[in-house]
Image 1 (cartoon, rainbow, N blue to C red):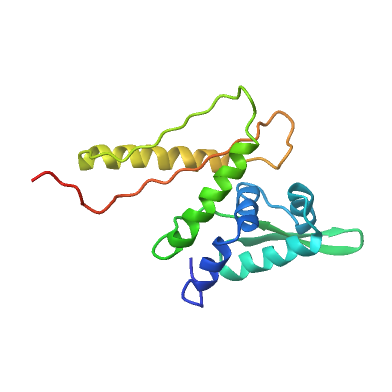
Image 2 (cartoon, rainbow, N blue to C red; image 1 turned 90 degrees about the horizontal axis):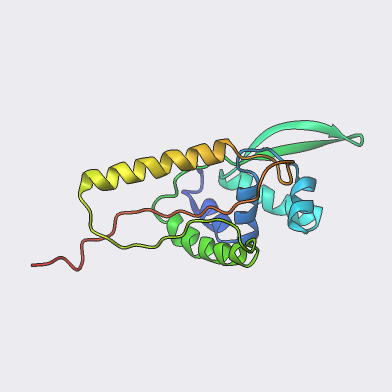
Length: 171
């Protein structure tokens, strides 16, 4: 990601929960501001404002234009990327809030997987697990369909894998 402001725009963009919802909607599919506004229950003007912020920060890209009712509407798309450095300072708290929101909308009786772990493992195990999960996330993003697609299920996926500082070692 190349950001002319040293990444500060992406930091501010990640700090807003509506923008995280937009990134999720724009994963694997391109949408217009009007389509996003309908999905999120916000005004077209509000959706456009947040999209401009995401675009300026380099977190989304334009994915073409189409004629709609005599006007021209831009389509936007999010290409998933790794957040690094200071970006995670803003991303993790916003993602936690987004996960809480999504949990409130989960389908009763729906099948899911949940795990939380802070463990010590051999480097080869860590790399293998990390690579398999990264591959699965890539597959999930590539399979994303427009919101409300017939036959598709709405899912929530939040994964944060990272190496931690080596505190708590046995002596």
